[in-house]
Length: 411
Image (tube, rainbow, N blue to C red):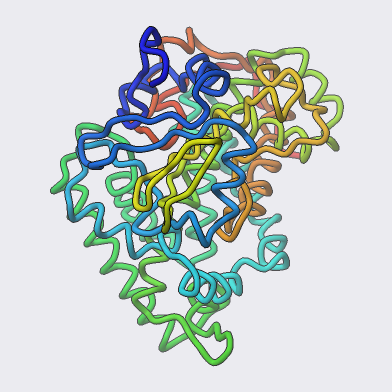
C-alpha cells in the first residue's frame, strides 16, 4: 500500500466480510491507491486490487489482455489444489475461442422466449413459497423464502424431477455453500455425487429428449459443433451455483435495503411498474457478487501502474458500484436512478452474466409479491448482529429474521 497508516484488510480473507463489505476502505483505495497491490499466501506475486468504475470496466472488456483462465475466483488461501483445478473446467473460466463456442451453444437454452415462458411458473412457485408461510408471523428470509425460488427455477429449467430436488439442493449447499464447518472431503463427495447425478440425467435426455434446458443443450449445434456430455454436466454444476447465489442474495439484501429505507419502499409499493429500474438500483446498491479476478496475458499498464503478465487483478464490483466518479450520491439508495451503469452482472465484455435476464425476472416477481402480500413487514432484530455468509465472493446473510402482521392471499 502507498500509505502505511491505513489498516488494510486482506480482501482475500472471508473474515474481512464478516460484517459486510468494507465500503470505507474501498473509498480510500479509489481516492488514494486505485490500483493497489496486496500480498497473498498462494499467489507468488500477490494480486492487484482495481476499485474505480472506469478501470474495472477496462479490465472486464479487454478480454484479449485480461484472461479468465485459469479461473476468475480469488483464492482465500485455504482452497485445496484439486478444488482450484476443478474450477478451470467451468464456462466462466474459459477464454476465446473456447468460451465463445461454448457460450453460443449454451445461449440456445437462454433465449428471451425461453426465459419469458418461465413467468407463469415463477409466479406460481413464488406464491406457493409465500403461501407456506401464511400461518406464521415470522421466518428466516434466507432459508424460508429467498433460497427456494432460484433453486426451483434452475431445477425447472434443467428438468430435475420433484422427488430428486431435496437431494440436489443438499448437494448444491454442500458444494457451493459457504459453511466453514463443511470439510473439503464433504464438499468433494457432494460434488462427485452431483456430477454423477447430472451424468445420469443427461443420459436419460439423450434417450428421451424433453422440453427442458438439458435436452436443448444436448441438441444444440453451432457451426457444426455440439456440446459434449461432459461439458453439459460441468455446466449443470455451475448453473446450480451461479443460478441461485446471486438471486438469493439480491432478494435477501435487497429486501433489507428497502426495509431500511421506508420512503423508498413506500414509493415502490405505489409505483410497481417501476420495479425493473428499482431492481437495477438494488443490484448496484447491494452488489451480491463482490468481485472477480482476471489474469493479464502480457505486461500491462493500468491506471499508471505496471502489472506483470500472470499476476492476478481483482475487479471490485462492490467498489465500482459506489464510485463517485460514475454515480451521483453513490452511497444513497435511489430507486429512480437513471442512468445506472452498474456492474453487478459484470462490467461488460464476453463474460457478462449469462443469466442476467433470468435473475432480473426472478427478482421482479419475488419483490412484487413481497411488496404486495406481506403486511407490516419488518426486520426481526438488529441486522448488525445477523451472521453473514463465510465468503470472499458473495455478500449476503446466512440468516435474516423477518416478521409481519399478515400475509395477503395471492392475487
